[in-house]
Length: 72
Image (cartoon, rainbow, N blue to C red; front, side, top):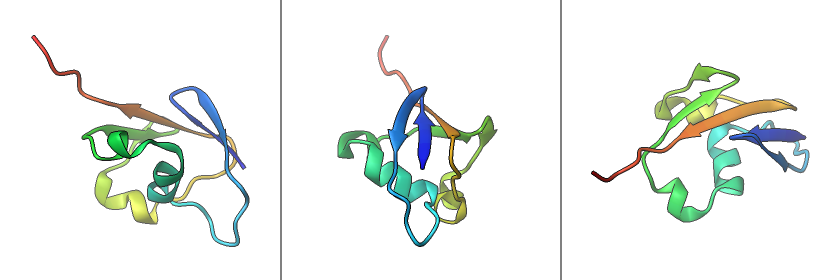
């Protein structure tokens, strides 16, 4: 299965169970980014953090992550 995160392609091994957003993030993001605050959109639709575990991705889905920029 292929997915896109911020335009970058990632290949996920097909599993017996569908991939939820939280599993995808655990497999594709470095731990430092997983621990940051960010907003997430799946195919252009906002998904709240409480729904990551029960929202599943499909082949060729697109995830956009928006990280806040700190500074002045």
